[in-house]
Image (tube, rainbow, N blue to C red; front, side):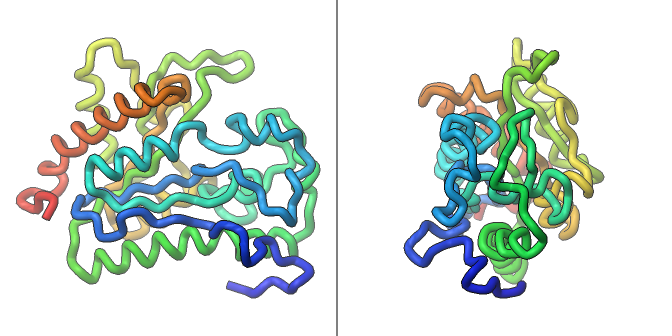
Length: 265
């Protein structure tokens, strides 16, 4: 990782860090990731030239995902790593250099502050992308060294509709090459009456379009899944609690199939 010059320093010393680790010694086999937890923008990039309202929408972050992740962490006694800055500063679930890593347009909204050169792109990666992923790597390395059973749950939220597309799914189970954990979640969630669950829709995981699952999950051979909850189910405290309780119950149920005899100890 390179060190940006003072002229390209993205985060001031008194600004919040690029990541937060919650409950690192949690006893659960689940490790939770929240790539789009925040809509914060560093002071050095004033609003990315956008109206503040746009940063509060899905363009800026995954609405409700951080609250859901924190509650699920508490229910499962699971470690959690959350990103500290908006996906529009740099997307922590995109490979560096991909068109959506630092998008100039997102959901049809221009982002003037993202018309930048390679030097600034590298500075943003050094400030916000790499610290988050190094924290995940350190956590997973420590669990590996303790021979601790580990599965990765990456928590996201999606909008109820896009232009020309209404989305009937209440939740979506996304995966790439490794379907082990996704299949167990799909089976459990589809047993619930009235719950519409997408199987790799409206999105799916790819090496070119995603980072966390391919690198931290598949790259280590760990069971892994990306869980997307429709945002209108996470707008209230009651909705967040209901989804957290549901996901916690499902994970406890399927944990024994993932790690026979391991339990949560």
